[in-house]
Amino acid sequence: MMKVKWISVLIVFGSLALLGIIVVQLSWIRNAMDIRQESFNTAVNNALVKTVEKLEKKEDVVYITERLNLEMDSIPPPPPMPQSGLNQDRGVKERFDSVIIIRHTEIENRHEYLPHGGMPPPGSGPDEKKQMLLKEIKRFDRKVQKMNDVIREIIVEVETKDQGIENRLDTFSLQKELYKALLDNGIRIPYEYAVVTLNKAAMMNLRSPNFLDEYLKSAYRISLFPNDLIAEPNYLLVYFPGQKANLMKSMSLLMTASLVFTLTLLIAFVVTILALLRQKKLSEIKTDFINNMTHEFKTPLATISLAVDSINNAKVIGDPGMIRQYTQVIREENNRMNTHVEQVLQMALFDRREFRLDLNLSDLHDIIRRSVESVRLQLEKRQGTVKLELLAENAVIMADEVQLMNCILNLLDNANKYSPEKPEISIYTRNQEKSVILGVSDKGIGMTKETQKRIFEKFYRIPTGNIHNVKGFGLGLSYVKAIVDAHRGTIHVWSETGNGCRIEITLPLPKEDRKTTSHES
Image 1 (cartoon, rainbow, N blue to C red):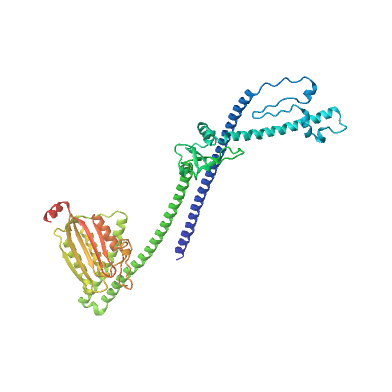
Image 2: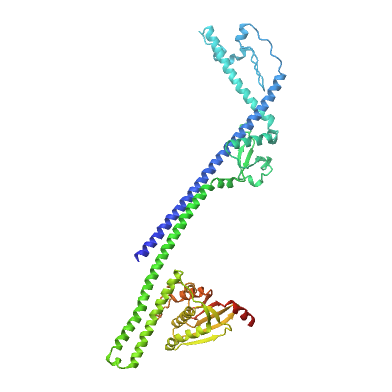
């Protein structure tokens, strides 16, 4: 009992440990896939940012270059600068901008920006006044520069916003910059792209040939020209149809190794558990076998001992009839023990594959009649009957008569033992194509479907409820099946609980007799 308990505990803890390993492996694989996915997302986002920056910078360069060339062509050459120090000190000059020109020829126009109403603070020397004036002029220049930048950006957007995103983007440049950015970030799988304007019902202005509408929801996206002062809802979308397959492919080696190791552990665990359960079952079978064998041998030995003591009795030793009667009892019990020993030895030979049949042409009907005659006395004690229906026209087979007779005796013995009272046994034969069928049926207690699956197992005994007179080692039907298989035959069972049992053995006819049987049929 303690051993069974420890086996159960081992199975429970081993199962939990194996389940824990599987869960950890699955969690690790999932985390690894999440990390790979995050790394891929980061690479794609970096590539999109780089692409948008390149496109925006290219548009600015093109526009500024064109505008600068235009403005420089339309501006007349500046007048010669006066050589006097006053004009030079006052910063009389012209500033040119690609968009707008702000002139500041008169220094007096700036005095309102100077502190103290444009006048230097009292007590200042000529040099200090000059330096202070130059600082204010530089501050004013910076402010003018900022205003020029803002005005330029506004003019750029005003001039380009009505052109439409398809006119602001060059398809070739878009494809080139996107491909290069993805390649620089280590992304080499196929992709599809599209440029979408959201305020126009997600209209796709530009897209690759295989970009589908269903990609809109799951595609990577980034806003185009994000530095526009007047932002337009234009987005660049990129979708990778083989992303999941590529992710699984990148993880295939690790996943395969993890799966192989996990399956190895699982198989090893299952095999170990099955081996433990088999050993436990064999241990139980061995214990039952020893108990049954002890009981089976103890009974005839006790009977023989009692018969010997009776023969030595003074009243019996002078009565030849009584001596013959006790001698017959000793002979029967001795044959009974020999039968059990022979079964065990024969099964041992089968297990070692050392069993050999002595095959000869034999009449199956003759073997059946001799078998019935051997059990007639046992059946008569229980008022049982045997009905013979030997209808096979050709019953000559290649068989080992001794072993085949033992098979029939085992079937008759089972039919007798598992019939509660007055056994009614029927034996029949018939030909079927190239074989002969031998059937044994009874009206005993029958058996369940589960029992029918196990009756040919060694040491298995049919449960008999309150019937305690059923004896044996559980080797009878196992021995029968082994002998039938050795004769290249088959055996089948039909039974229902409470409605008896029918067992049919199909044995092949010799090749010479098959033609005769077919012709006669």
